[in-house]
Length: 500
Ligand SMILES: Cc1cc2nc3c(=O)[nH]c(=O)nc-3n(C[C@H](O)[C@H](O)[C@H](O)COP(=O)(O)OP(=O)(O)OC[C@H]3O[C@@H](n4cnc5c(N)ncnc54)[C@H](O)[C@@H]3O)c2cc1C
Image (tube, rainbow, N blue to C red):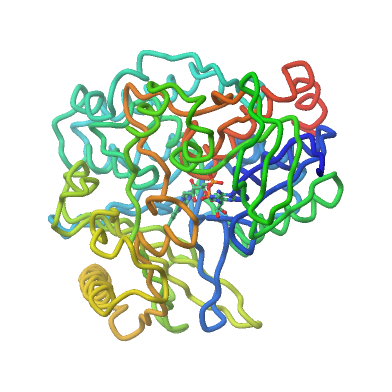
């Protein structure tokens, strides 16, 4: 039987972070990934030689002192990647189809406030109160500081209020409310369900700065691989745990892999979907309450994605990197409702990459979607889906293109769709049970699965544990990693590596 200190299951950003964190703290780690390649949602895939992002298009927090900057620096990754900041004045634009109007929103708290006040002069006081509240939530949340991250979170009042409640208390202006809650597409939960606290924690980074990485998520995967070489971290792809065995005294003695290999370890950290975690733990040691809690988690939204290019001479006046959200109307709750049948939110992410010495203009388009939209094909697998599914995709591509051309008539002759992906595609590529973009729906009043599981040497981390997105997923690994290496070692690790 092979022996490790820790097994980490899943090699998305959560698993990569967990493995490196533990490795840097002197532990011998085995990282298991079900797919043939590591990276999960970070992966970039190539079609016709053109790179397309899977689940890491842009992020906040990469500015000096930002949470992502700190996490990457502590892990020795920051110097291995190259952030590309979006233009400050119009990083995030919102095109409202119902008004045929474009709202250009900058980043930076001061600039955002001013721009919104220019758009909505009578709402100046509401806008100030909103941003003050976001900042207060983040200041009152100890875990927004890497040194203070901990499994037991202190809850504040805003953890018990929804975003919608707070916005309704500030203004009646529907357009302003839609713009402020439009960032819900970055976590996939309705304004009437997300807590104001979590909305603020996720938005903080995006309000401070918006960036992507040169080379996309692959650059980060390569940086991790490089760092793994300095530590005792073994990676095993096409591998997963088939059985958690010898559970005595609520402690697992043996982990049997799909390859037949048997592993003994001190801890096993699962960075996969909570519903997959539930399947792994022997049922006889689980309480009914635990099973019912995990089974009741709902699904955050997913996307129908369109991967396209723009001709090189098209639209040169537009920034190389930009994000435009096209909303049909102002009802964000409706757009995030799986039962809703009308036009939904479209997010257009424009990037440029140099491919074989040539600049390529790339557009990733994400349209909110749910497993309900593809339920009839749920038992089919990729590459073997019926004509009806291909027709569904064709229809969806057609309607997305029509909406893009209404907002951007110049794209009409210049946009080429290279590929597309439905919620089912994401489900199958990412080995997630529901194909959602952000794991479970993180609702008000919900207790997520994080840290120690009912089997004492097994832990849950990942995007469904703390907060969704790249930052939230990484944070969950720091939190759980801390509880494994214990506070004293964590503090000295931070003292050694933070603000080097
Ligand atoms: C289309 C899309 C766009 C997105 N855009 C952004 C964005 O621009 N910015 C942002 O911050 N976030 C974005 N997100 C969300 C972000 O990608 C996720 O929050 C984050 O990457 C999740 O990381 P993770 O490691 O928790 O999970 P994942 O990246 O899903 O990794 C989980 C890994 O575990 C593996 N696995 C599953 N089951 C097993 C098993 N039993 N054994 C072994 N391995 C297993 C999977 O194959 C996968 O590699 C997007 C997501 C999607 C889908």
